[in-house]
Length: 372
Image 1 (cartoon, one colour):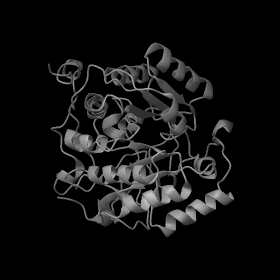
Image 2 (spheres, one colour):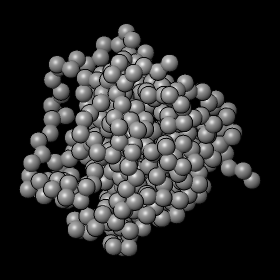
Image 3 (tube, helix red, strand yellow):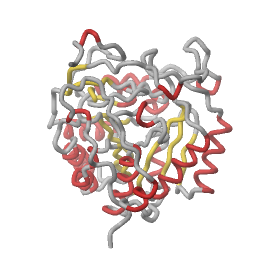
Image 4 (cartoon, helix red, strand yellow):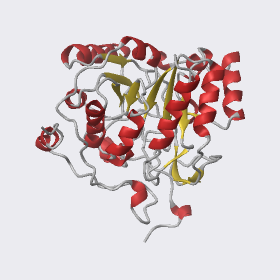
């Protein structure tokens, strides 16, 4: 029997205009038991301090976004680079609303049941990109598990509209996993983005707790399927460090991603959006981020690794689109873990906590390889 909504606790930001917000639940996870996490009262290291946004271009872009009823992940996810990027005239648009069907424990985006599907959004995004005269744009979204295609058609239409308006502007998409639906993936790829991104977010051990609506091998194999369907399109993923992962697990994630032929990897520091999100396990130093860049590129063969405390998925994205070329496909080329239900498919589920079935190494290397 489900609890009444008022009995549920957790992160539930107000003033969301595209859905009903549901609390995300406890910020405690089993992986942090016995671990000395960072106190919320502890000062951040000097390398994480950034200037508060407020320059003229930042204010202009904020007015522009609001006047066109658009959302940006820069604002919704509390990106520390928002001042730098907006002053430079770049932004990452968040389509499909501001309420997500999944409840990731590290994410500042609201969780709940979306109630709006704005089919005019692709036009308004393209108009705004043209008004900003961008050379590269990143399009991301909330998860929309209640939609048959997860919003893939809106993604494709947005890419096409931007390309029609600004043929010289490269478009990067940072997509959800669409519940592992290859047809939805093909719909987005068919629009011809320069980069297909989908974030792994964390290592396998932490995945079920901090990203309960997602699946570790589904995310990796989704990128592998992209390589099979559109080998010339760059693939990209991101991992957040500082949530309790171990060095050996980061290496394993890099190895698993390379089995899917992933081209670009971003690594950044986890910053706790609120006291209702999981605590920071540790501060990762700039020197360690430099080491992970070297390891990723030299030992594992990523075409490019963007690694630093303040790095986020779209950081320096334009340079990546211009300077990095797509590599070969890996051994994982078909989507795994497609038989697990998404949150919106579980009747009566208010909080996204679905037990994950562990995928064996043999299954990942076997069922995920290309068929002759």
